[in-house]
Length: 327
Ligand code: TXA
Ligand code: MG
Figure (cartoon, rainbow, N blue to C red):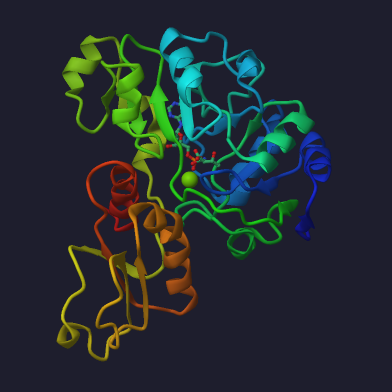
């Protein structure tokens, strides 16, 4: 199969409606879309990505008023979050609608619902007219893609089409929030921070920090089991990746095939095979996955990654960095 290069929403929608797999840009990373009601198409998607079948997909819609196409109930927490942040980089987990294939939700009775804030994605979703399940458009386990050429690198010949446009992306995926229980729980940190969520829902908490017995008492039965995707390897380049606080001395790097990325002004980098110094945490997040991929293109052996600051958008970036390092 040849992967078609497309540049119109109409072409994307035509392929999606025929059960095809189309990669398209969103404001976070590229998604690999498929009709969420079409079982055979979803089966192909899991095969194309090499994705474990117990990892549920996020279902995307073009307009928040259409939530009822993917979910059976809009809980007050979800309504509050969508009013505040949608369209945008947030995914609300809700009881699923019967029309969404159980393959898309990995057999869970819930669905992750997201309304992207990106003109091309929105146009494709509206034109397709069906809920679109879309995981990140990369080979399972690899870094996500923020350019269509990276999508091609991973998935050429395995998907029907890719939308050829690179728009400036946030670079970390959406914040996933379980909105089914008495308190909202962040299952995956993302571009919308916990602080922002707490401005709307002051009791919201974070899976990593929440005391599991406490949340179970609150009615969230075995949250880890409800989001099994969290347990698989993610975002990993071929190169070995090590988290560091800053650039090591030249002596330590000499003669080794090492890459470095971090925040700050370019400094003594002669001993590095590849480096990137970003001016802000936003720029770091936007460039991180592509940097890992570039290191692989250059057959770098070791990537030294400066840890992102543990606040704001840095929390989501640090989470991706830790997973990329296999922690
Ligand atoms: O920004 C994003 O969210 C991107 C773009 C393409 O929308 N998508 C994305 O999809 O990152 P993916 O498949 O790489 O990650 C989906 C995450 C996984 O952690 C999965 O476990 C969680 O969402 N998830 C999906 N449905 C869920 C559900 N019903 N319950 C709990 N977690 C769910
Ligand atoms: Mg992914």
